[in-house]
Amino acid sequence: MSKLKIAVIGTGLVGTFHAEAFFRNPNSDLVAVCDVDKEKVNSVAQSFNCKAYEDFTKLINTETLDAISIATPEQIRIEPAVMSVKKGLKILLEKPLGRNLEKINELVNKIKDHNKIISVNFILHEDPRYKLMKEKVKNDEIGNIVSCFARRRGNRFGIEIYAPWTDLLSSTLIHDIQMTMSINKSKPVRVFAEAVIRECKEYDSHDAVMAIMKFDDGSLASFETSWVLPKNQPEPLDPALHVIGDKGSIIIEGSSMGLQMQTETNYMKPDIANWPTIDSKVDGCLKRGLDKFIEDCVFDQKPAVNLQAALEAERVVFAMKESIAKGIPIDINIS
Image (cartoon, rainbow, N blue to C red):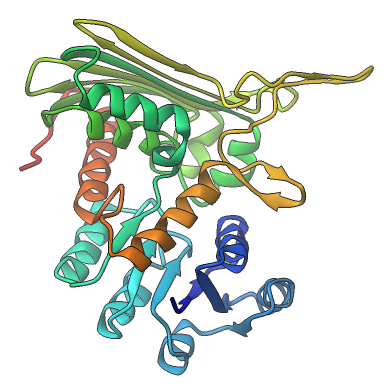
């Protein structure tokens, strides 16, 4: 079996993780990486023994590829995605899909008829706890869903690092929104959200958000998210998902998966679930999600989250933002 020839556009934190995972995957051949930051892209290319490009147009038109990973900032999605479709490539898109719903709809409309796989990288689907939860719900082991509660609290690094260029709902809570939608048999019809706006006011964003969403079968989902906790909190990411059915419940808590570490000067519950570095290599559900994309491409499998499912989650995100701005519940129209 020949290896899947793949390139990565974007060598920020997440894009570099993509490059590393594809470099280490035995079924893929990392051909090139691309970024406008010359120093950064050359460093990543050297680390993973591939070519470096500063222009994604040149990369896509020069190299012979089977697939592309687009891990650029969300403002730069449409042009590389459209070019990749024209080249007949299989596509992995990072979320969110864009900075506003108009641009997201433009992206989706331009690439939705592509006859190759388009996967959107929602990594919770490769967390073994969430995978088992999805299986139990699908098999009706807890009955009909009555309510879900999702929490995703980060520390203050979020305000310092992410708030200047993205926002809490699009970058963080969207994972939990999409997951609750994926396990519910019905569609969301209405959402109401409130926000705390203090330190993120200068970015026209939110420090914290709480929201409640109604599904057309009458079930509810509630959400809490923030990035205000102290930098020295033991668990830098504090997520949860509680799924309550009429025959049982499933509770997922934390990102440390039970690991606690204490020294004479420190106590921590490190993130083992998402993208820990173990043996000097990226691991966790991010790595498994990237491996899953390679597997889906090689064996022509359906992705966990396709373009339509990602679009529906984005519509809920922007309905929440509208609700915050207007102070009223917002109807959601997802056909």
